[in-house]
Image (cartoon, rainbow, N blue to C red; front, top):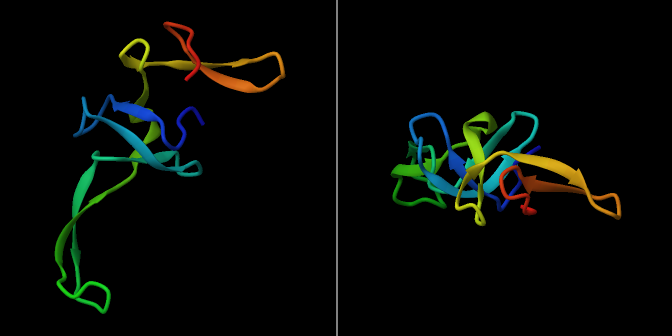
Length: 102
């Protein structure tokens, strides 16, 4: 997966196009990720023991990974990334523009 937990990403398509945020959770099988402050929907909750109030709450829902790009702090923009192998044989992600390790 090109996107991991705690990455800063930029939304390139959908209703939240242009927003950016931090990845909270990744779902590899579904190819989706939950991003902080993106794809917020309203959920109606019933009163219960834990939630005495009930009512409408706002929840972040997963967004497809194809609609996200990594945000490079060095370039200060959304970029594509690629993989390289370092001297120890570990796989690293780098920015395609500035060649910095992400």
